[in-house]
Image (tube, rainbow, N blue to C red; front, side, top):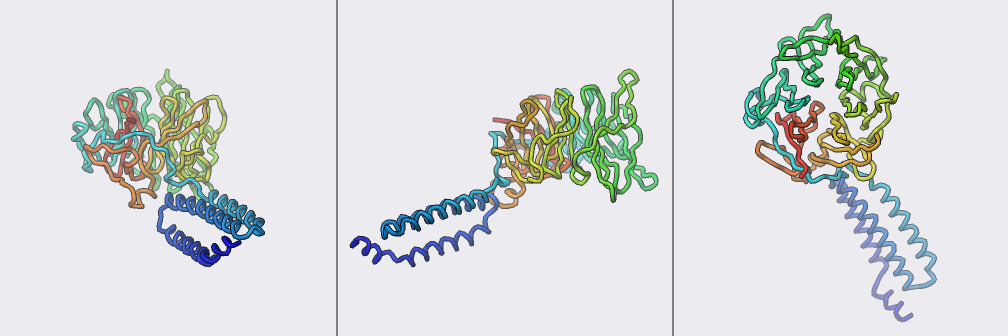
Length: 426
């Protein structure tokens, strides 16, 4: 009992209460000053520290008076409950990404906002956006022009830009197809066409599509193995908003496309699909991004209807640790058992097995929140630089695109800074 009296004389419980109150006040004042990732770390640390403090109080009471064993046990249980509550609040944040050892460098472009042909180092782009590759050629929509990168040289492709604005570009073997907007408006409506460029000659190969102020725009198109042209058509008029999958069947003998056919409705309305992209893999499975929902849809070659392939509806965060979630997925590029995704400033790779997404890693880019925090060593890449993928700043653009070069290097177009980058795994 003498030891208990000494302890009581030297350790005033009021001091302990004051210390705990001061600690809680300091942590509470600091948390709003932190970014999202740091707040989660602080909450986790605070929960752990809070549990330790409660356990310390329990031990202190146990040594002072054994009659308080029941109270100590209750305090320990309370500490565990509070710790568990805080742990549930520590959700995955925009920095919950698993970066692979990759680097980013300039593939083409001098950084000048101009349309100038020449070598990859000397050429210039206005706003390189949608891309498509075939063998050793890379086609890029650059403003109102189409550029071709081949064997170290960039050149402008003959295209009637005085009559059409190119919007989306795809290859069907050696032929180049363009979804283009007519510069001539009739009856206050925009007119759109699918145009084929073959041997330097351009021709309209589809019916005329009209779009008024609200309806009938196309966000992307792609070719299946049979040569059919599939496209996403959006209707966003007052009282009627839908997103549908359509196709133009290709008659190889007659070398022409039939009229547009409705295939299916997407499970989301047009407002969630306005920047949607689509792509077929080598096995003719179709992938479609739904940016407004933060998910990627999949329809197998022999399946009817779409299922969520990756992402969680409504979870608009970056995460590839455990469950996979996306912020705003747009461009898709299937290749060699993987699906590359451009996700709101980051480039991510989803591994595919048996039609399922089994894992996800981040190759390059930082999240917008991390870029804005000013606490990370990120910057816009310039010609001649080579930076780690985790330090690469890509300003999010819904027109940015992914493609592969003739050497199998992953390429990323940057309309905001007039570059085309290459991403290499080290």
